[in-house]
Length: 336
Image (tube, rainbow, N blue to C red; front, side, top):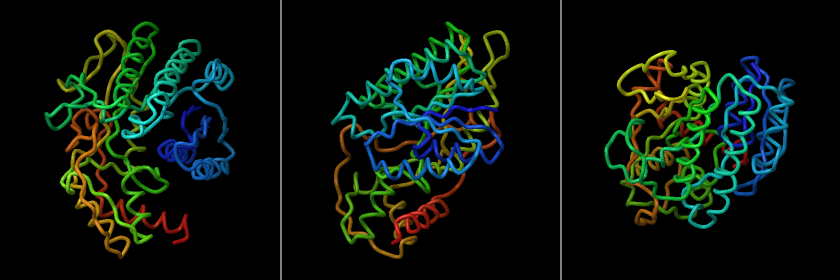
């Protein structure tokens, strides 16, 4: 296949690109190298991918008029995986414009490009934050998601809705997936695991929200990439072309569109994650307890029934395996 990945220098885009290249596919990787976090880390990821002859790097931003349409016209991908976005829950309180530009305008530009140059399957990255104020656990894809707590979550919900409309109007097979706290080697420096590792090694205290009682459905990067790759082979059928796989399916009745959680359904307390990190580092953390910030939720937990039915497996790597793997990469990359 020829696969276009937007956000290919990002954490997930890099790992997905590496996985696809190892399978023998051609990968076109688009990234704008925004300075939201260390651009050097992003360029190092892209440099790793560029060692493969089947990788074609493209630098540009989603918001640039005509860029995506021209890229699809030239590259003619079979599949598009849209991972590029302005990420981060808390940063959306400081700079909401970045989310409007990337997540709304950028995603619209991609939909228009796919409308002009159809693909076999369009896959879009959303977020568990879309469940917002939903207090029913686990989070099921069939739950109404109408109470986003941050503009980041609202922008992702809007992207899902826009994608459904394009799927309906132009028969674009589309799968949107909601990620649950992804972590692992080459991770994002703004995420808790990365921040805690840096501070513990530097002898600095860490801020622990909700007294360590907050729970997250941690998803190891290799499990996530495996799920995306498997979902790529399962485009939603057009209305009348196939029925739902169960009562839990989100297959649209008016479009070849589906929404899928990617998470393991096994929440872990934040203090347990820190305990595992301390063991992997061989160092103790000084913990400063803080209340839960605005826009954060106390617990996330993915319903896994739909993912299991579609691809036959769900994320299962425990933090006792995933966190040491992250620490080993961090020590190699930063020489500490």
